Amino acid sequence: MTFIVISILVEAVDDVSAVLDRARMAVSSGAALVEWRIDPIGEEPEAAAAVLRLVRESPAPCIVTCRSREEGGHFGGDDRDRISLLEAIGAAEHPPRYVDVELATYQRSRNLRQKVNLAVDHPSQVRDLQTGLILSTHDFAGRPADLMQRVEAMAAEPACRVIKAAWRARSLRDNLEAFDLLAERQKPMAAICMGEFGQMSRVLAPKFGGLLTFAADPDEGPTAPGQLTVGELRGVYRFDAIGRATKVFGVIGWPVTHSKSPQIHNAAMARVGFDGVYLPLPVPPEWEHFKATVGALVDHPKLDFTGASVTIPHKEHLVRFVEERGGVVEPFAAAIGAGNTLMVRPDGMLECANTDGPAVVGALACALAVEADGLRGLRVAVVGAGGAARAAAGALALAGASVVIFNRTIARAESLAERLRALRRADGSPVKVAAGKLDSLGCGCFEVVVNGTPVGMAGGPAPDESPLPDDMPLDDSVTVFDTVYSPRRTPLIREAQSRGARVIDGVAMFIRQAAMQFERWTGEAMPRAVIEEFERSAT
Ligand code: NAP
Image (tube, rainbow, N blue to C red; front, side, top):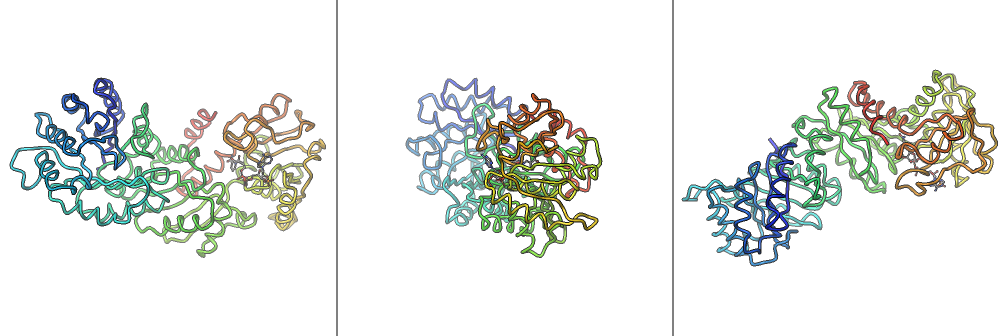
């Protein structure tokens, strides 16, 4: 069993009532333990009384931590005073379940060690004490070179009941080491990677038998980088359902923090009762990072890494990776040279697909109320020559549309058109793809215009702009399809609507490509209720 610990920083002795209220809220939303981070008040004369009250009235069993500055906390006073405070608390009538002391402090002097040992239960304790000792080590810069020695030193201390090792992850691979430490643990243990790369270690602690995972107070923010809230752990990532056999999925990209994919895939897995969890998996842009990280995830013997969505800037890397590993690249992904879906079969064989293209075709056919073959002969302008545009142009051309690609950098539009012209439709006939100059986009000869650039995307290069030229004729004879899905109502969608054009927003495509991925991974259709809920919440 892995306990969610809500970590609460007590910033002033007068705050005791307020922080107790916050702890009650967190416990009512599912935290099993409270960590009172008393380091900001540790040097105050009234600290002991305040902490005794916190422990006595704590809404759940608690950990008392007075973290030193050297290990990321606020306490800058004398170690002896800090340990005396813990000693008084450990021996009180209402003691905490645990006190946390850094290994470095514990090892600093015999005297400190003895004082700590007086406050906690251990094999040679003569007093009847309940409080267990968490020995901890933290590194906010990266994995300490002597990590293994530190863990062994903590395990070897007879007074240590729980080992806690936390360091800032530099890549997703750090999490795998945390999982290996948990698998080999000699005592109850928490192995936590901090920062953006480390969320995996926080969410997957139950899979690897971690004793604790630390959660952030939603009002006050995290006490260590990368902490999720109890609501996110339990609501989005279904923490309570994660076990040893849970299959791991995720979205690989850079950046991925704001991806909506975890929301829809985790909700769908919950709904169909699939034992899986879907995580953001940040991988820096270079091929070497992609190859090393995804290789390590796929090869880890106990991770059960079963599939991933792959997004900017790794769609081409995915095809190369699967090819290099002797896997299967599905024909459409191979033809356009970009994949967005990785599947890891039980025998370890890799497969790669592209569901973006079929999602564009499906969303357009649905909006026009035709079957996919009803798109034959349709005159389509695709703006952009990156991953989304490539998938849209390729899939629409294969569906029989006559496609012209427009791009800011015309050379990229031309080379994409040339590549796509090599495609053959199911009946062997050639596809119709050309490249055009942006100033000819307004010729009035297109029935459908697809935006495959990030123009209009929140946080993108031009969030307030439309990718179309001002003289572009838009009326009810034109369908405007924006692949941007955040925000849902982009400047382009608003403009097209105001001029009477039919519009398709990026959410329609997003849901379709996600549903196709979900079906590949789980063998189940994405539940209607999940899709409807996602549509309702998309803004
Ligand atoms: P990408 O590979 O980086 O391609 C970006 C394209 O946009 C390039 O052709 C680039 O032109 C052009 N571009 C970038 N900034 C521009 C600007 N300020 N003005 C004009 N053109 C500009 O990106 P991507 O992966 O194709 O993604 C593009 C968009 O599609 C993103 O907003 C993404 O969210 C969306 N998307 C949506 C879905 C969905 O499910 N709804 C799926 C995939 C992608 P140059 O060649 O001149 O640089």
